[in-house]
Every structure is written in C-alpha cells, then in structure tokens.
Length: 171
Image 1 (cartoon, rainbow, N blue to C red):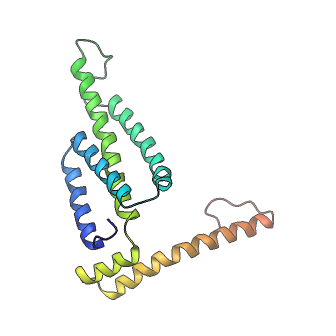
Image 2: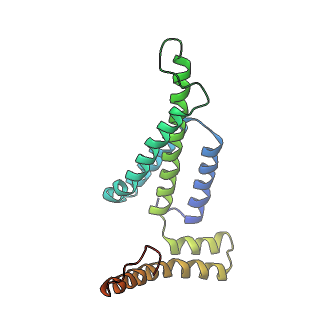
C-alpha cells in the first residue's frame, strides 16, 4: 500500500467510505475491516502500533454494540420463543453499529499508517492541481505541530518547577 499513489489511495478509500455510509450490512462492514487489517499487515506496519491504536477502537466498538443492542427500534424484551424476532433485530442493530466503527477505523488506519504526508501533498499538487500556497500551508501546519507539543511540555515543566499548578490547557 505504500507504493500506491497517495492521491489515488485517497480517492479509492473515499469511495469505500461512501459505500460504507450507504450500505448498512454488518458483513460488508466487517469485510472492509478485515481487508484493511490484512493490507496493513501486508504493508508491514508494526504490530505493536496496530495493537496500541486498535485497543480503544475495539472498546468503542463493543460499547456501540451494546448501545445498539439495547436501544434498537424493536422492543428490547428478554429473549424467549415469542420475542426471538425482536432479539435478532436488536443483535443485528448492535452488529451494524459495532462493525461500522471497526470499518471506518480500519480505513482510517490504512490511509494514515501507509501514507507519507509530504508525498500526499505533492501528489495532490500534481493530480488535483492543488495551488502551491495551500500545499505550503499544509506542510507548515504539519511541521509546526511537533514544535507546539514540545513547547507545551516545556511550559508545563517550567510552571511545575516554580510550584505553580496549571490546568491542561492553561499554558
């Protein structure tokens, strides 16, 4: 996936994202997630990074399953022979919610972990005729974020050294 033109990858994954928004089928969503996970492994993304990034996603997907299961459009009655249809509707609703979270996260991980930012901006310049002013602005914004984080940590450390207690965003 790293060898694919970033602009083409962007368009392809954007089309897949719109297809996921259109279809509410848990099998299609899970297939998109499994395909993106397989492509990530083929792209030799570090497994430790995948586990670290995927843990909150799986937690959120489990939460969405239980929310979709409990608050579905059908009655949420205890499962018995007479309410089996309501239970399967609730289960399907929960699976749709959870699988959508996994599918969108998988597509996002596939794009971000296999795409270089600088090559993406250069590709947008060539394929989409992105003006140089916007390209320069994007590259400058991406370049300044690490400096901002470093300065934020320095400022917090300076306050702590002086014994001043600060809130998360007060520096």
